Length: 536
Image (cartoon, rainbow, N blue to C red):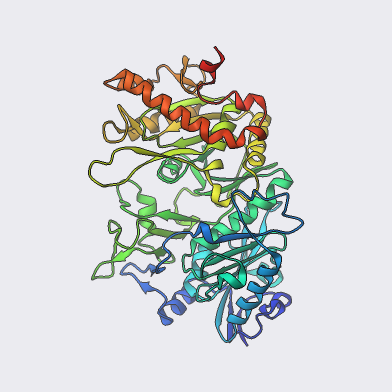
């Protein structure tokens, strides 16, 4: 076996059963990975010097094919309603066969870090058969100093072999695609998919399992900090504006997707960004747009024109087109990935029912309720005449990556909010003046103005009203914002239609939260929508 690159001799791949690989390239940097990817015809070079790769049939995650090893340790730790179990015997067999599958292959290794806070960092080794996957994960995780690689010892090892095809009967999985996580021993096996995001989310899943035991809250959120050190975190599902609203030129970006909140404050899990690029424009998001033209970036499933230039408006392969780039490609990004405890917590939703106000203040109990709910709404589709919104509840704003029970994360968040006195806000970037199909999207200018006021503390002393449906506090008037949109009912032509829609949405919340009621205290249950009415 030929071996190249900087590594720790004590942890070479032969030590874990991969000694029969044809060659191993450790910790190659961008230019060499470009060369290998292009030479192997894994990817194309765009006219701007970006590496473009296609992932075939898998253009997104395969959550139904993700498994967690169920053993004596994890039996009572994992939320099995949300995580598919795999027996230790099946995992061992899968691992053995994947190691055998790697015989004679050229492999690429990156030794990286998950977690910018050294006290909680997870040294992670990622072994791939694609050079472009190696560059992708190098962009996304934290890159240690080259001098540290000679003594690097991983605590998490990811083996990523897209050409491996799983046998469901043999391994107890569902299809030829498998993502199997042994969280106790720190091994993740990925086979049958070329979608690179599986590697990134495997690290997030591992940290979501490990950190709560140490009192650290893992979060699917973006984070930034103002010039005065006032940190903020932004929870939100896809389409709510999490990336856009946290990318504020007046504030320093800590990270756009995954963070921890521990004893020392907030820390980014990653060293890069994985931004959606569909219909990305230079005018609306210039910093992210610029990365799609920069050497070192990996574009995923982006269509190129006849001149090799990316067509970011073309969703013919998938709407989930992506740009993977290191964090320092964003001009106002933090170098350390660290900041203090958050003063402000923003929970974003895009309410397509047109019911929620553009901003509301949450008590710690309401914050936990809405965190566990993880609500947003999406439009039902693009077919003519289909205008009914569809509610989405993804608990903790990231259910697919939460191995533990949501209440464990919710209680931890509630405790941290109380301890550090963070202000909590629910911000609706969805529809006003009616539901989707009748109303209009919340003006981005108003959202930014309300968000800026919340971050500056300007809303601390304004007059509030209690929303009769949700029970949270809503500002009556905010300087520079049309007062009408602060009262959603007033923006509807038919007030009774609004009431009916609000009643419908409240019931959706109540129905969804039923599964959490036995896991939270009475104060959180009392924070449910409609409770003030019910108590009368």
